Image (cartoon, rainbow, N blue to C red; front, side, top):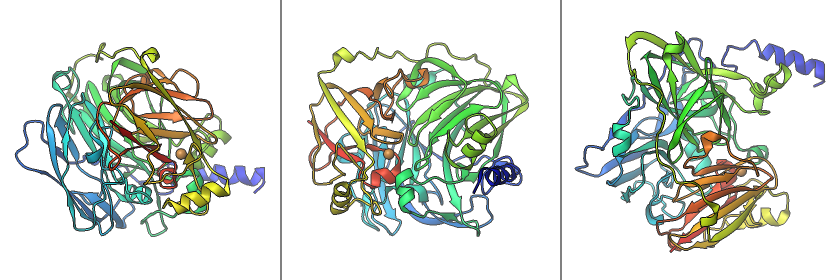
Length: 491
Ligand SMILES: [Cu+2]
């Protein structure tokens, strides 16, 4: 395609409905409100999670084959409280071996749900999770090595909110489904029959799987929600396999109050948030500012059709209104934007006694590809790794002393990767050798890694043994399955 043909194609693509994606809703549907399972008031029996095989209509009119957890697609929003021990009974009725990992939880390795804690079909896994951490938005998803990408994409994912005394009494919107909303963002591909597709090619392994259609809580964007006058809270999870999303508001700045591991020290105003797969942010919107507003989502800088259109027509990436908020006359949460949110200790790098370095390898070498295949990674013809080694379930890569504060430095030899560490929250000291944006300076368990070093300050307070080690890995799920993952113990 020459430049003229490209521009012609791009401008006709620009005539697509506003969502700009392959499957767009003709008229926006209501935002699906994900059912909650709330145990903050007490627990009298095991909390059942049934992983199942089902079907779901994302809005194309066709039913897609899906996985779900207690629901046809995705899981419930679980709500629990600091100090509780959560007795789960996870039953696997998907027909495939799987695992269920609790992303963001500070819990021991043997209940972490990583690749060593497989649940066979028709079997149950009953971990007891001791919740010691403060209020935070966490999530759970498949971590079955080699199948994480496909199983999570198909629907094995859900949100786990931890509350604490401070969060329950905080002067913040907290009426779920009224002024407090959960948003699970994903990108999908639907085939010409309108069914969800997931196809792996060599290129998909390289870039990670990216879809052309944005989905919120299982419904194709845009979706609408009516909201009262006042402050509205959005708790947002990027559950894409590989897609970085840029979030903004149609009118006004975003007010960020929490990141992966809990509340920020104080609210941060920003024009946009760059959100990697696996990250969570909570934002407040003041609906008194405009009759309608919208959460805008861009598919990132240079990726996909939206990115191409953005670069052709000026600007970096084109935003679409993903969630349209229509203000009602009714008055809702009338409090003001919060000033102080939490007390965060300063991130003091001098407190670290150990420094470790991790180089993420995109491969290209035959040796990496051979080792990746030998050790059961799922990678097409390629191979990925960390420090020259693809993931090996039988190898412990790092041994950490419990209670030590460490600096982990991570860099990549190619591309941008979202790096995740199990069993902890950390503070980002530098991101690609620069100061992280203000909204990413609180508790995190994800950091964006590029060619320059990114450094995080981390302390591990829970045990992980050789039989049930923690993972650290790229959260582009195809990269993780392909071997960009390692294992560590804490003891
Ligand atoms: Cu990666």
